[in-house]
Figure (spheres, rainbow, N blue to C red):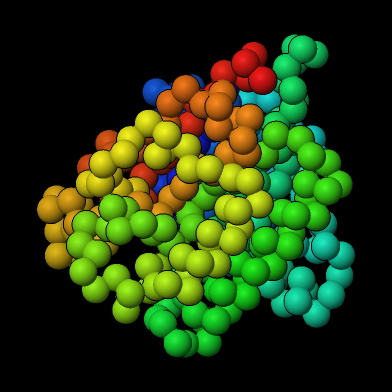
Amino acid sequence: MKIATWNVNSIRTRLDHVLNWLYVNAVDVLCLQETKVVDELFPQSAFESEGYQVYISGQKAYNGVALISRQALKNVQVGFTSVLGSSEATERFDQQKRLICAISSPSGAEQPSLRILNLYVPNGSEIGSDKYYYKLEWLALLEEYIQNLLQQDPCHLLICGDFNIALEDRDIHDASERAHHIMASDLERQALQRVLQIGLQDAFRKFTAEGGHFSWWNYRAGGFQRNRGWRIDHQYLSKALYQAATACTIDTAPRRLPQPSDHVPVTVELDMAAL
């Protein structure tokens, strides 16, 4: 089974990029972030005509997440409220469409179900800003959300998306000033580590130890051409899934296209029969 994550930075702008990529890369589920469109205007029919099921949670011009799946998904939930219930915190954070979750159940009864959680973590703008503390609070609520999710149904869990955090120095082209840079500050890394301590591991690092591999490059100053990037798009797996992972790769080809997203797809391959 193959699951990919991709911040497309506007699905309507990159629609041809995504469809062409899917034609070449036969993934089972594609998790999109930053779709930047309300649900009614999402180009759903373009995917359905290619045999995909589409599940979306979007808003105008900002944020937005989607699941594009070969098979119908079950128990689709959007936002924190779906699991944690209505509260001042969940209602506040769910105003921005950043989280969608669903269960993929293989046709073969002998294979277990897989819960896929697709995230677009807030950027945080700059250290010390209101948006920075919003990001830290969002990650704290995510930790609570996942804990409750697993209590309700402890099935195999895959969490992917644009985390807007480079967890280690080797995930940045130049980490010399990282402590003072958004997406790499100590508090951000600590907040994500607390989420992972629930029982999640980095699929990419199972297969690739060295630095120099990135998923996002700034549009300015020839960031991609000079490989001055960051690895901030991740695939995190629960323990059994991590053992069943057979590959995790970053595909830089879409970044070479005209008017590309600043992010590229990250794909994990799972041997579900090994579970």
